[in-house]
Amino acid sequence: MGLKPQEYSSLLPRDLMYLSDDDLLLENYHVMCNYGIARNKMGKIYKEATEVFRYDYGVLALKLKAYEKLGLSSSFIAKVVVRSPDLLIGDANIDFIKILELLRKGGLEYRRIEKLLSDKSTYNWSQLLSLLNLFGKAGYNDEQLSELISQKPWILREDSVDRALLLIGFLLKFGSTMNQICSLFLQFPKVQVEKFASNLRHCFLFLNEINMEAYEIGKLFRSHPIFIGSFTLKKTNSLLSRLNAGKKRICEVIQENPEIMKKWVKGSKIEWLPDSGEELRSQMLKTKFFLDLGFVENSDEMKRALKVFRGRGAELQERFDCLVIAGLDRKDVCEMIKVSPQILNQKKEVIEMKIDFLINDLGFPVSSLVRFPSYLSYTMQRAKLRLTMYNWLKEQGKVNPMLSFSTIVGCTDNVFLSQYVDRHPRGPEIWEDLKKEICSA
Image 1: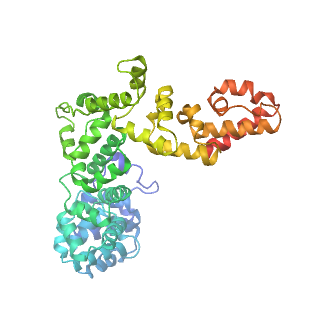
Image 2 (image 1 turned 135 degrees about the vertical axis):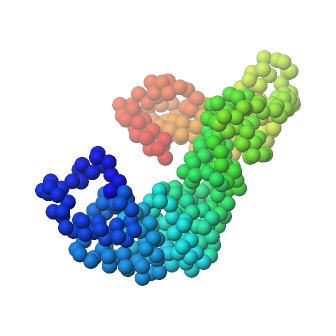
Image 3 (image 1 turned 30 degrees about the vertical axis):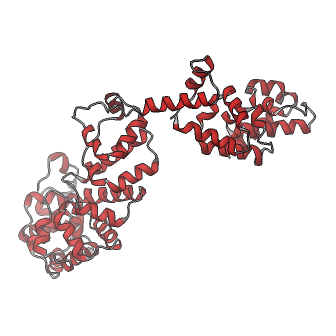
């Protein structure tokens, strides 16, 4: 029956000595043998659908006959029963019948479908029907579905259907439409769907690890899914060291020409990325910016500012302008940057958000920044937590009501706790409650 001793030892009945003692077992065995099912395939059927060998006389033959009435040949039925023994359990499998009808309407004859079925694969008709219905809802008609199955018969296999459904879900998360996904399956490369999905995932992890923006990753996956799924990239650490470039530079190169990643596959020799000259241009812009503010070239003040600032030189001016537009005098902003050059390390949107929070939530005028520019370096949660705690202590009469904004926010946690919070017996408790409330929000 095709089973090894370790497979059949647990299946042997404990109350029988001879096969002839089990009339129904032999009867159903002979029905299948006479139908054309190979003897060495019987063990698989017995393991997966043991109840088939318990049918009363004539029942199994009627079940096989029921499939013949659909127009299927005995060779087709014998082949599909071996791969899906559950077809013989209960009534005729509705999902299996629906798939046959759908493919036949699309122009695939049963003889052709039989040839597409593999003797080495298993099939999950319910999952396959779900996949075909998904394509149908996307606009594929019966002819297109039949063409898809005819061109890509591997889709029929149980493991492939499962992987295909996971792949569809993966691509939908990146904004791909079902029409785009259907088109992908028609053009599917000569690679197993499991490997294809693994390549996509590996590429996503790489792009995420080099800090590519989410919308850029989505755009890449929507426009180049076949290309990305056709090869396996080297690991991120290996690529970063061998390309001899920063993450930002690699992101830019990929966005300009995604197909360059094909040179970074496993087993390939990686060449350094050519210098874009961006670093030199950025450094020149930084220097010019600080000179325009009144910094003296090669001075310690200038060196400190250049060392502190992170990012591209082109971003400095828009962040500076953002402070002026908020209502500060240009001269004051220049002085603020000399005192705290690190405030320009934040994106324009972050600076705007913190200024809005200072004015509309904390109730301080924008001019407060002139005396305390470092506020922009702190998180909004820190400022809100400190001021809320200070206001509570002020109501309790435990702190100087005239403390400056910079004193409240700028001192260290240890100093703030020891000099202000601990002055009230309930201070530490209120502090912890506020911290949980504000930080979680």
